[in-house]
Image (cartoon, rainbow, N blue to C red; front, side, top):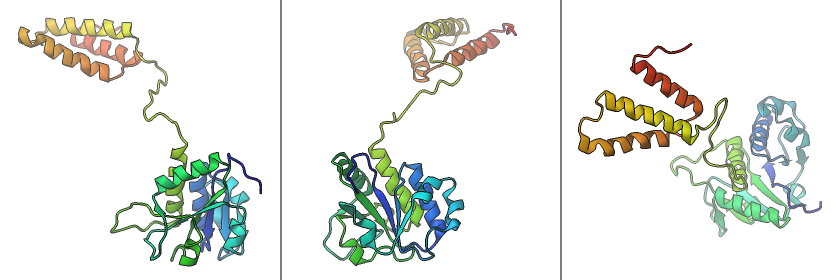
Length: 248
């Protein structure tokens, strides 16, 4: 198979026991944009329609999933291979976190290197003979007193880190919906009215603290990132407090 710099890593499930678990893994994969699912000697054969309900619509992954008799066959086109495990192995091996794995996978992709991630059996995970053939062992820094994950959780954890490593979504966005961010003029009209109303009601009890208190009030509304709808509502509140009749 030819190298393709845009090809995401393959998810390889070694001897999965339950088709339902395969379906759940397919769902987790597609959540994060992974579609190359490979099964090594699935206990009940493949395809297996029992996987479909748990896939919850991730049919693209299930329909493209391929079954192999051996791990050698499942990985023969791959150039880099990683093993996931919940425990430290009694062998000399490079151990990395899922986050480090994600960065390495993205670096491999940029060079056109085809990669695979091994996930072991539901009950016993991967055996040492499978781990030793991998470039690194991936161990998630979970609660050391309870590191147990089910198969789909493990796949989602790795897939999520891979997606995050290539994602540039802003950590914080302003959702406008049916309104827009209030303009400086809209906000200025409101704060001038508010200041006047506070003066008239005797809110500023001492003149020497007036400026300090007013700056705190202004800061509150500045941090709120008001929309035009917010400003209209605040004007309505002021009108009600001032005893004015609200227009219909």
